[in-house]
Image (cartoon, rainbow, N blue to C red; front, side, top):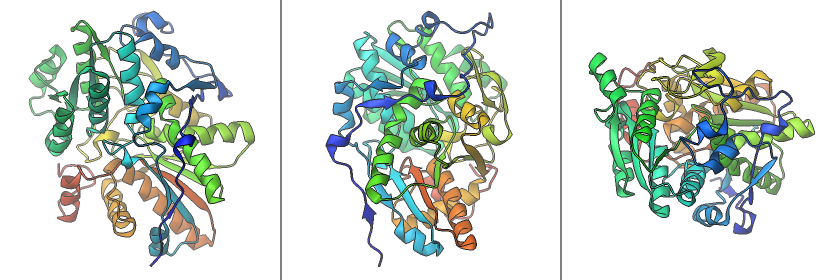
Length: 439
């Protein structure tokens, strides 16, 4: 039997700085616009939602941003995370390709999301914030923010997309275990939630709706700030610890990637592994293929328009230049709740526009076929979101077999699926459909 091959980094190699891709772009990223005036958003307007330090990071032009020691201390609970070579999957596919995966599922909540939840809670704490309001799709972000808030003594209220609230009750319980208040969205707690329910009593919800509820909650509760787990520049910034570690670990493995892959909904975990490699591509002329993989039923990168749009359904956020399906798009009820978003990170969208990355879309049944094959080969049950990346990894490994090419593939296994077993039950029992109508 093939032995697992791991490339652990010592604790001393925990990154000291986040890597900021903004100044590397050969063409500047278009700024967010005020929805009323159409003018670029100024820091004072964003500080209504976020503490000043996070606003500064959102607009930062520095190549790196120092990670506070207090944040690094919490990171050290689970970072550096392991890089493993998927030798059993390689054997099962009979491929000459070498497949590596960065495993973020070792974090306390089982995903990459604490990488930004921890600094966001920290910066809010030192700014005097008492409470954070946010949304969550599959519950990975909500769990991470609840965890971070518990460490820094903040109250936490989460609006969880209704279909995931129903499909993933244990994620709700995990948030509550960490002390968070959790509401299915659309809810009766906000004016916008009540409006949605009046028009669509059976609404399964969406991240756009949940964002609108969380922002309304923030605006109507003193001492509260809003927190976002994907899309924005500062969120992508915090996630770059993933790619920085991966570069060092690939050097330990003695190989250079040909292909870098990550799933993408709002863009945070993809940015986490991809952006440090994009920097090397820009600065050093590396010829990596970097692929963002999204659901075929929510294909913002592959079928959406690149234009200014709102980040939420109620049209309360600044307008962002991004690939979008429209802020009123209602995604099907697929089990990868973390990827059910109408828009894509402006930075990820900009990378695609500049030809620095590629995009692919895969249907739900193919995703779970890949997830089960990975679990039966490598032993880890992947989160449905991560399994989108695995499906494309398998496609590329099969291509290598057919073409006789020994390429090196690395991907971000951004979370485990141990609280997503209802989704696996739907697949294994034959009830699952590509459209998500099984939900």
